Image 1 (spheres, rainbow, N blue to C red):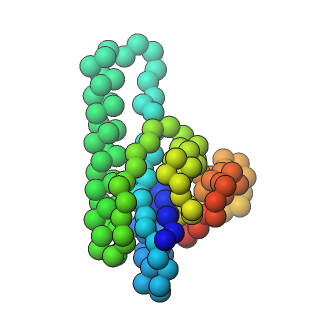
Image 2: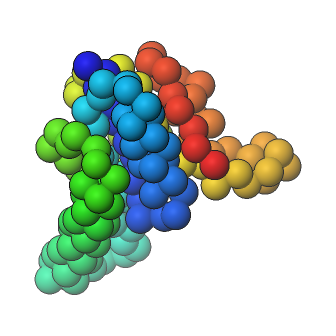
Length: 142
């Protein structure tokens, strides 16, 4: 049974990545998946009252839970066999790689926005960083 970690961010690209995994399962590949959502650390400048920081943190946690709830529902509708979803905070590529190792993922799956060569050269992308640094195969879905 192949353990796959699917990075989700609420985008159409992430939904297509789940659909690609579901197609593999329908074609006989025995697999189980865990969904992962990585949220950014709150960015605060200057002095911020604790109440404001807590409100930002709570809003980000709520957003993360909402993204995962929608993704879990989509995964169930696609017929994927689910393991518990995972949550992380930090830089997306770093956390995806860290969670993949901690989870024991045998493959990482994620959508790519297909930004184009010039834009990717200037700013890079999460998918490129994961692909470059992963210790397991990475399936990128456009």
